[in-house]
Amino acid sequence: MKNTITLHDLSFEKFITKTNVQHAVNGVAVRLNEDYRGKCPVFLTVLNGAFLFSSELIKKFDHDCELSFIKVASYEGTQQSDEIHTVMGAEPSLKGRDVIVVEDIVDSGNTVETIIKILKDEEVASFTIATLLYKPEAYKKPYKIDYIGLEVPNDFVVGYGLDYNGLGRNLTSIYKLKESTMTNLVLFGPPGAGKGTQAEVLKEKYNLVHISTGDVFRYNIKNATELGTLAKSYIDKGQLVPDSVTIKMLNAEVEKNADAKGFIFDGFPRTEAQAEALAVLLASKNTGVSGMVALEVDDEVLVQRLLERGKTSGRADDADEAVIRNRIKVYYAETAILKGFYEKQDKYHGVDGVGTVSEITDRLSKVIDTL
Ligand code: IMP
Ligand code: MG
Image (cartoon, rainbow, N blue to C red; front, side):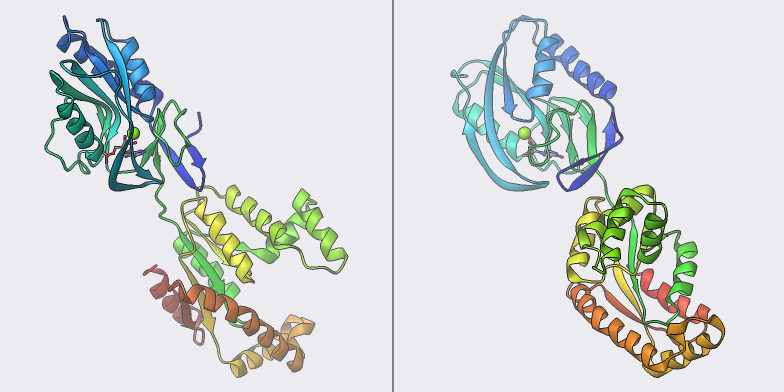
Protein backbone atom coordinates (compact mmCIF):
# COMPACT_ATOMS: atom_id res chain seq x y z
CA MET A 1 0.00 0.00 0.00
CA LYS A 2 1.09 3.57 -0.62
CA ASN A 3 3.18 5.50 1.90
CA THR A 4 1.35 8.78 1.46
CA ILE A 5 -2.39 9.07 1.10
CA THR A 6 -4.79 11.98 0.79
CA LEU A 7 -8.12 12.08 2.62
CA HIS A 8 -10.30 15.08 1.82
CA ASP A 9 -7.84 18.01 1.89
CA LEU A 10 -5.06 16.48 4.00
CA SER A 11 -2.18 14.08 3.39
CA PHE A 12 -1.14 11.38 5.76
CA GLU A 13 2.02 9.27 5.81
CA LYS A 14 2.35 5.64 6.81
CA PHE A 15 3.14 5.41 10.48
CA ILE A 16 2.35 1.92 11.82
CA THR A 17 2.49 -1.00 9.39
CA LYS A 18 -0.24 -3.59 9.10
CA THR A 19 2.08 -6.17 10.71
CA ASN A 20 2.76 -3.97 13.72
CA VAL A 21 -0.95 -3.28 14.14
CA GLN A 22 -1.50 -7.05 14.19
CA HIS A 23 1.24 -7.48 16.82
CA ALA A 24 -0.44 -4.85 18.98
CA VAL A 25 -3.83 -6.57 18.69
CA ASN A 26 -2.26 -9.95 19.56
CA GLY A 27 -0.52 -8.46 22.59
CA VAL A 28 -3.81 -7.22 24.02
CA ALA A 29 -5.59 -10.51 23.22
CA VAL A 30 -2.93 -12.60 25.00
CA ARG A 31 -3.32 -10.55 28.18
CA LEU A 32 -7.12 -10.63 28.09
CA ASN A 33 -7.09 -14.40 27.67
CA GLU A 34 -5.00 -14.68 30.83
CA ASP A 35 -6.92 -12.15 32.91
CA TYR A 36 -10.45 -13.29 31.99
CA ARG A 37 -9.96 -17.05 32.34
CA GLY A 38 -13.09 -18.54 33.92
CA LYS A 39 -15.14 -15.36 33.43
CA CYS A 40 -17.69 -14.43 30.79
CA PRO A 41 -17.04 -10.75 30.13
CA VAL A 42 -19.00 -8.34 27.97
CA PHE A 43 -16.92 -6.59 25.34
CA LEU A 44 -18.33 -3.08 25.16
CA THR A 45 -17.12 -1.68 21.84
CA VAL A 46 -17.06 2.09 21.44
CA LEU A 47 -18.40 2.88 17.96
CA ASN A 48 -17.50 3.71 15.33
CA GLY A 49 -13.73 3.74 15.53
CA ALA A 50 -13.17 0.62 17.64
CA PHE A 51 -15.19 -1.76 15.45
CA LEU A 52 -12.16 -3.12 13.55
CA PHE A 53 -9.96 -3.55 16.59
CA SER A 54 -12.78 -5.15 18.53
CA SER A 55 -13.73 -7.60 15.78
CA GLU A 56 -10.15 -8.89 15.54
CA LEU A 57 -9.66 -8.88 19.29
CA ILE A 58 -12.81 -10.89 19.91
CA LYS A 59 -11.79 -13.50 17.33
CA LYS A 60 -8.61 -14.05 19.34
CA PHE A 61 -10.48 -14.31 22.66
CA ASP A 62 -10.66 -17.96 23.77
CA HIS A 63 -13.33 -17.87 26.50
CA ASP A 64 -17.06 -17.30 26.53
CA CYS A 65 -17.99 -13.68 26.08
CA GLU A 66 -20.83 -11.40 25.01
CA LEU A 67 -20.87 -8.26 22.95
CA SER A 68 -22.39 -4.86 23.36
CA PHE A 69 -21.91 -1.52 21.66
CA ILE A 70 -22.02 2.10 22.67
CA LYS A 71 -21.69 5.23 20.60
CA VAL A 72 -20.46 8.57 21.82
CA ALA A 73 -19.28 11.52 19.74
CA SER A 74 -16.72 14.23 20.40
CA TYR A 75 -14.63 14.85 17.29
CA GLU A 76 -15.05 17.34 14.44
CA GLY A 77 -12.38 17.04 11.73
CA THR A 78 -8.99 16.72 13.42
CA GLN A 79 -10.05 18.89 16.36
CA GLN A 80 -11.49 17.43 19.47
CA SER A 81 -14.11 19.11 21.63
CA ASP A 82 -14.97 18.58 25.28
CA GLU A 83 -18.65 18.06 24.49
CA ILE A 84 -19.38 14.36 24.51
CA HIS A 85 -22.84 12.97 24.04
CA THR A 86 -24.14 9.44 24.00
CA VAL A 87 -25.59 8.61 20.60
CA MET A 88 -26.43 5.01 21.37
CA GLY A 89 -26.43 3.32 24.79
CA ALA A 90 -25.31 -0.20 25.76
CA GLU A 91 -27.93 -2.92 25.37
CA PRO A 92 -28.87 -5.11 27.26
CA SER A 93 -28.13 -4.02 30.82
CA LEU A 94 -24.54 -4.38 32.01
CA LYS A 95 -25.52 -4.65 35.67
CA GLY A 96 -23.35 -7.13 37.56
CA ARG A 97 -21.21 -7.91 34.50
CA ASP A 98 -17.44 -7.84 33.95
CA VAL A 99 -17.05 -5.29 31.19
CA ILE A 100 -14.10 -4.80 28.84
CA VAL A 101 -14.40 -1.40 27.19
CA VAL A 102 -12.85 -1.56 23.72
CA GLU A 103 -11.55 1.73 22.33
CA ASP A 104 -9.66 2.51 19.13
CA ILE A 105 -7.68 5.33 20.71
CA VAL A 106 -7.53 7.09 24.04
CA ASP A 107 -6.62 10.72 23.51
CA SER A 108 -7.74 13.28 26.12
CA GLY A 109 -9.64 10.58 28.00
CA ASN A 110 -12.96 12.44 27.78
CA THR A 111 -14.64 9.51 26.08
CA VAL A 112 -13.30 7.01 28.59
CA GLU A 113 -14.48 9.25 31.43
CA THR A 114 -17.99 9.45 29.97
CA ILE A 115 -18.14 5.69 29.56
CA ILE A 116 -16.85 5.00 33.06
CA LYS A 117 -19.66 7.18 34.45
CA ILE A 118 -22.19 5.16 32.48
CA LEU A 119 -20.69 1.88 33.74
CA LYS A 120 -20.85 3.05 37.35
CA ASP A 121 -24.48 4.11 36.89
CA GLU A 122 -25.20 0.68 35.46
CA GLU A 123 -23.60 -0.94 38.53
CA VAL A 124 -21.26 -3.26 36.63
CA ALA A 125 -19.30 -5.83 38.66
CA SER A 126 -15.95 -4.74 37.19
CA PHE A 127 -14.54 -2.96 34.17
CA THR A 128 -11.24 -2.60 32.34
CA ILE A 129 -10.27 -0.43 29.37
CA ALA A 130 -8.61 -1.95 26.31
CA THR A 131 -7.42 0.42 23.61
CA LEU A 132 -5.47 -0.16 20.43
CA LEU A 133 -3.73 3.23 20.62
CA TYR A 134 -2.97 5.54 23.51
CA LYS A 135 -1.61 9.10 23.42
CA PRO A 136 0.16 9.58 26.78
CA GLU A 137 0.96 13.25 26.06
CA ALA A 138 -2.70 14.05 25.51
CA TYR A 139 -4.24 11.97 28.29
CA LYS A 140 -5.45 14.10 31.19
CA LYS A 141 -7.59 11.76 33.28
CA PRO A 142 -6.79 9.71 36.39
CA TYR A 143 -8.31 6.39 35.21
CA LYS A 144 -6.00 3.51 34.51
CA ILE A 145 -5.89 2.31 30.92
CA ASP A 146 -5.50 -1.41 31.50
CA TYR A 147 -4.64 -2.77 28.05
CA ILE A 148 -2.73 -0.68 25.53
CA GLY A 149 -1.83 -1.95 22.05
CA LEU A 150 0.59 0.85 21.21
CA GLU A 151 1.52 4.24 22.59
CA VAL A 152 1.59 6.99 19.97
CA PRO A 153 2.72 10.63 20.03
CA ASN A 154 0.17 13.41 20.08
CA ASP A 155 -0.40 13.48 16.29
CA PHE A 156 -3.63 12.99 14.44
CA VAL A 157 -3.81 9.44 13.07
CA VAL A 158 -6.16 7.54 10.77
CA GLY A 159 -6.65 3.96 9.63
CA TYR A 160 -7.73 0.67 11.18
CA GLY A 161 -11.08 2.07 12.26
CA LEU A 162 -9.90 5.64 12.89
CA ASP A 163 -11.20 8.32 10.57
CA TYR A 164 -10.71 11.86 9.41
CA ASN A 165 -14.19 13.25 8.72
CA GLY A 166 -15.49 9.81 7.89
CA LEU A 167 -12.64 8.59 5.67
CA GLY A 168 -9.74 6.25 6.36
CA ARG A 169 -11.43 3.65 8.56
CA ASN A 170 -10.83 0.84 6.06
CA LEU A 171 -7.04 1.28 5.92
CA THR A 172 -5.19 -1.71 7.34
CA SER A 173 -2.14 0.33 8.39
CA ILE A 174 -2.15 3.45 10.52
CA TYR A 175 -1.21 6.80 8.99
CA LYS A 176 -0.39 10.09 10.62
CA LEU A 177 -0.98 13.64 9.49
CA LYS A 178 1.92 14.99 7.48
CA GLU A 179 3.30 18.26 8.79
CA SER A 180 4.69 20.72 6.31
CA THR A 181 8.23 22.07 6.49
CA MET A 182 8.15 23.57 3.01
CA THR A 183 9.07 27.09 2.03
CA ASN A 184 6.92 28.30 -0.84
CA LEU A 185 7.66 31.72 -2.21
CA VAL A 186 5.66 33.82 -4.61
CA LEU A 187 8.33 35.98 -6.20
CA PHE A 188 7.46 39.32 -7.74
CA GLY A 189 9.40 42.13 -9.24
CA PRO A 190 8.81 44.67 -12.00
CA PRO A 191 10.56 44.15 -15.33
CA GLY A 192 14.23 44.93 -14.85
CA ALA A 193 14.21 44.35 -11.08
CA GLY A 194 16.51 41.35 -11.31
CA LYS A 195 13.91 38.79 -10.40
CA GLY A 196 15.32 36.08 -12.68
CA THR A 197 18.82 36.53 -11.26
CA GLN A 198 17.59 36.37 -7.67
CA ALA A 199 15.38 33.34 -8.37
CA GLU A 200 18.47 31.45 -9.62
CA VAL A 201 20.44 32.37 -6.48
CA LEU A 202 17.60 31.63 -4.02
CA LYS A 203 16.83 28.32 -5.67
CA GLU A 204 20.38 27.11 -4.96
CA LYS A 205 20.65 28.68 -1.54
CA TYR A 206 17.37 27.27 -0.18
CA ASN A 207 17.21 24.15 -2.31
CA LEU A 208 13.88 25.18 -3.83
CA VAL A 209 12.35 24.29 -7.17
CA HIS A 210 11.87 27.32 -9.40
CA ILE A 211 8.59 27.19 -11.30
CA SER A 212 8.47 29.89 -13.93
CA THR A 213 5.00 29.86 -15.43
CA GLY A 214 6.35 31.12 -18.76
CA ASP A 215 8.81 28.21 -18.92
CA VAL A 216 6.11 25.72 -17.91
CA PHE A 217 3.86 26.97 -20.71
CA ARG A 218 6.63 26.85 -23.30
CA TYR A 219 7.67 23.35 -22.20
CA ASN A 220 4.13 21.97 -22.36
CA ILE A 221 3.40 23.55 -25.72
CA LYS A 222 6.73 22.50 -27.23
CA ASN A 223 6.28 18.91 -26.06
CA ALA A 224 2.62 18.94 -27.09
CA THR A 225 1.45 17.57 -23.74
CA GLU A 226 -2.29 17.25 -23.32
CA LEU A 227 -2.40 20.46 -21.30
CA GLY A 228 0.03 22.22 -23.63
CA THR A 229 -2.13 21.43 -26.61
CA LEU A 230 -5.17 22.66 -24.74
CA ALA A 231 -3.42 25.89 -23.75
CA LYS A 232 -2.27 26.41 -27.33
CA SER A 233 -5.83 26.12 -28.60
CA TYR A 234 -6.71 29.23 -26.58
CA ILE A 235 -3.52 31.11 -27.44
CA ASP A 236 -4.06 30.42 -31.17
CA LYS A 237 -7.51 31.97 -30.93
CA GLY A 238 -6.01 35.01 -29.22
CA GLN A 239 -7.73 34.12 -25.94
CA LEU A 240 -6.34 33.97 -22.44
CA VAL A 241 -5.59 30.49 -21.16
CA PRO A 242 -8.20 29.76 -18.46
CA ASP A 243 -6.98 29.56 -14.86
CA SER A 244 -8.09 25.95 -14.60
CA VAL A 245 -5.64 24.93 -17.35
CA THR A 246 -2.78 26.95 -15.87
CA ILE A 247 -3.42 25.49 -12.43
CA LYS A 248 -3.40 21.96 -13.84
CA MET A 249 -0.01 22.58 -15.45
CA LEU A 250 1.33 23.95 -12.21
CA ASN A 251 -0.13 21.04 -10.30
CA ALA A 252 1.73 18.69 -12.64
CA GLU A 253 5.00 20.58 -11.96
CA VAL A 254 4.43 20.37 -8.21
CA GLU A 255 3.64 16.64 -8.51
CA LYS A 256 6.84 16.08 -10.53
CA ASN A 257 8.79 17.46 -7.57
CA ALA A 258 7.00 15.63 -4.77
CA ASP A 259 10.09 15.67 -2.53
CA ALA A 260 10.89 19.36 -2.99
CA LYS A 261 11.71 21.43 0.08
CA GLY A 262 9.63 24.17 -1.44
CA PHE A 263 8.91 26.17 -4.57
CA ILE A 264 9.56 29.59 -6.00
CA PHE A 265 6.50 30.56 -8.01
CA ASP A 266 7.47 33.04 -10.67
CA GLY A 267 4.86 34.64 -12.92
CA PHE A 268 2.05 33.10 -10.92
CA PRO A 269 -0.42 33.88 -9.41
CA ARG A 270 -1.54 36.80 -11.52
CA THR A 271 -5.10 37.12 -10.25
CA GLU A 272 -6.86 36.62 -6.95
CA ALA A 273 -8.62 33.55 -8.37
CA GLN A 274 -5.22 32.08 -9.20
CA ALA A 275 -3.92 32.90 -5.72
CA GLU A 276 -6.89 31.06 -4.24
CA ALA A 277 -6.32 28.09 -6.54
CA LEU A 278 -2.65 28.02 -5.50
CA ALA A 279 -3.69 27.95 -1.85
CA VAL A 280 -5.94 24.94 -2.53
CA LEU A 281 -3.20 23.18 -4.47
CA LEU A 282 -0.68 23.66 -1.68
CA ALA A 283 -3.21 22.77 1.01
CA SER A 284 -3.51 19.36 -0.59
CA LYS A 285 0.20 18.98 0.26
CA ASN A 286 -0.51 20.21 3.82
CA THR A 287 1.38 23.38 3.04
CA GLY A 288 0.74 26.87 1.79
CA VAL A 289 2.34 30.02 0.46
CA SER A 290 4.97 31.08 3.01
CA GLY A 291 5.20 34.57 1.64
CA MET A 292 5.03 36.88 -1.34
CA VAL A 293 8.40 38.54 -1.79
CA ALA A 294 8.42 41.54 -4.09
CA LEU A 295 11.50 43.40 -5.27
CA GLU A 296 10.90 47.13 -5.12
CA VAL A 297 12.75 49.35 -7.55
CA ASP A 298 12.02 52.93 -8.45
CA ASP A 299 10.45 53.36 -11.91
CA GLU A 300 13.18 55.68 -13.19
CA VAL A 301 15.87 53.19 -12.19
CA LEU A 302 13.98 50.45 -14.00
CA VAL A 303 13.61 52.51 -17.16
CA GLN A 304 17.33 53.30 -17.21
CA ARG A 305 18.27 49.64 -16.54
CA LEU A 306 16.01 48.33 -19.29
CA LEU A 307 17.14 50.91 -21.84
CA GLU A 308 20.71 49.94 -21.01
CA ARG A 309 19.86 46.24 -21.38
CA GLY A 310 18.08 46.98 -24.68
CA LYS A 311 21.33 48.25 -26.19
CA THR A 312 22.88 44.79 -25.94
CA SER A 313 19.98 42.32 -25.55
CA GLY A 314 18.39 43.09 -28.87
CA ARG A 315 14.95 42.71 -27.22
CA ALA A 316 12.57 45.08 -28.98
CA ASP A 317 10.51 45.59 -25.81
CA ASP A 318 13.65 46.86 -24.02
CA ALA A 319 14.44 49.50 -26.65
CA ASP A 320 11.40 51.75 -26.50
CA GLU A 321 10.89 53.89 -23.40
CA ALA A 322 7.10 54.13 -23.87
CA VAL A 323 6.84 50.33 -24.12
CA ILE A 324 8.97 49.97 -21.00
CA ARG A 325 6.86 52.41 -19.01
CA ASN A 326 3.72 50.59 -20.05
CA ARG A 327 5.14 47.22 -18.98
CA ILE A 328 5.92 48.69 -15.56
CA LYS A 329 2.39 50.11 -15.32
CA VAL A 330 0.85 46.74 -16.19
CA TYR A 331 3.05 45.10 -13.57
CA TYR A 332 1.84 47.40 -10.80
CA ALA A 333 -1.80 47.03 -11.82
CA GLU A 334 -1.50 43.25 -11.60
CA THR A 335 0.60 43.21 -8.47
CA ALA A 336 -1.61 45.55 -6.48
CA ILE A 337 -4.37 42.94 -6.34
CA LEU A 338 -2.01 40.22 -5.13
CA LYS A 339 -0.22 42.53 -2.77
CA GLY A 340 -3.59 43.20 -1.13
CA PHE A 341 -4.44 39.49 -1.13
CA TYR A 342 -1.24 38.48 0.67
CA GLU A 343 -1.10 41.57 2.88
CA LYS A 344 -4.41 40.50 4.41
CA GLN A 345 -2.70 37.25 5.44
CA ASP A 346 0.45 39.05 6.67
CA LYS A 347 2.38 37.42 3.89
CA TYR A 348 3.50 40.39 1.80
CA HIS A 349 7.15 41.38 2.01
CA GLY A 350 8.58 44.22 -0.05
CA VAL A 351 12.36 44.12 -0.45
CA ASP A 352 14.56 46.98 -1.70
CA GLY A 353 15.77 45.83 -5.12
CA VAL A 354 18.47 48.45 -5.69
CA GLY A 355 22.06 47.34 -5.06
CA THR A 356 24.45 44.58 -6.04
CA VAL A 357 23.16 41.04 -6.63
CA SER A 358 24.54 39.83 -3.30
CA GLU A 359 23.20 42.83 -1.37
CA ILE A 360 19.72 42.09 -2.68
CA THR A 361 20.10 38.37 -1.98
CA ASP A 362 21.01 39.23 1.62
CA ARG A 363 17.90 41.37 2.00
CA LEU A 364 15.71 38.63 0.53
CA SER A 365 17.32 36.01 2.76
CA LYS A 366 16.59 38.04 5.87
CA VAL A 367 12.90 37.90 4.96
CA ILE A 368 12.89 34.24 3.87
CA ASP A 369 14.66 33.11 7.03
CA THR A 370 11.75 34.40 9.13
CA LEU A 371 9.05 32.64 7.09
P1 IMP B 1 -10.69 11.23 23.76
O1 IMP B 1 -12.09 11.37 24.24
O2 IMP B 1 -9.99 12.55 23.62
O3 IMP B 1 -9.84 10.26 24.54
O4 IMP B 1 -10.77 10.70 22.28
C1 IMP B 1 -11.35 9.51 21.97
C2 IMP B 1 -11.98 9.47 20.62
O5 IMP B 1 -11.59 10.57 19.80
C3 IMP B 1 -11.55 8.24 19.89
O6 IMP B 1 -12.44 7.20 20.13
C4 IMP B 1 -11.57 8.68 18.47
O7 IMP B 1 -12.85 8.51 17.91
C5 IMP B 1 -11.26 10.13 18.50
N1 IMP B 1 -9.82 10.41 18.24
C6 IMP B 1 -8.87 10.80 19.14
N2 IMP B 1 -7.66 10.95 18.56
C7 IMP B 1 -7.83 10.64 17.27
C8 IMP B 1 -6.92 10.59 16.13
O8 IMP B 1 -5.71 10.85 16.20
N3 IMP B 1 -7.47 10.24 14.94
C9 IMP B 1 -8.80 9.93 14.80
N4 IMP B 1 -9.68 9.96 15.83
C10 IMP B 1 -9.20 10.30 17.05
MG1 MG C 1 -14.00 6.61 18.68
